[in-house]
Image (cartoon, rainbow, N blue to C red; front, side, top):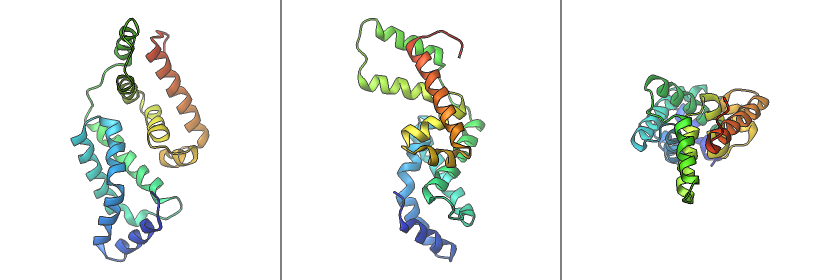
Length: 182
């Protein structure tokens, strides 16, 4: 989705053409709503979070230096905003232990439909500790490579690798019903 148009629109907005920001919103609206939805699992709240992110991005646009791709910067700004918003207003979440019990009950007779499995994984990811959750969402659900994920999360690539490994391990244990301490 990264285009020269992003750079042109940023320059245009910074030069005083505020209408050019509409192009940025149009291009990035769905990806930012989808990212927010991965965190809150509520479409209306995701739309509100994305709207807040665009307002914040607009106010901070002069801080975009162009060192990284615009997509990396916009996801990083949005991710930080989403984290802060979710800390202020706690989510209703299910515990990983409850999700493991649900997974166990399905495995005794009925074959879990693909969509049910995916929903179970999404719920499990949503309740991971934040650093593991964020790394998994950025890397797997937003299809970013390690370098991009590290830039968005503001940590070294090795840290992202460790967080991904640890997050997958927690998910594997909980979803397989392994009762070992995580």
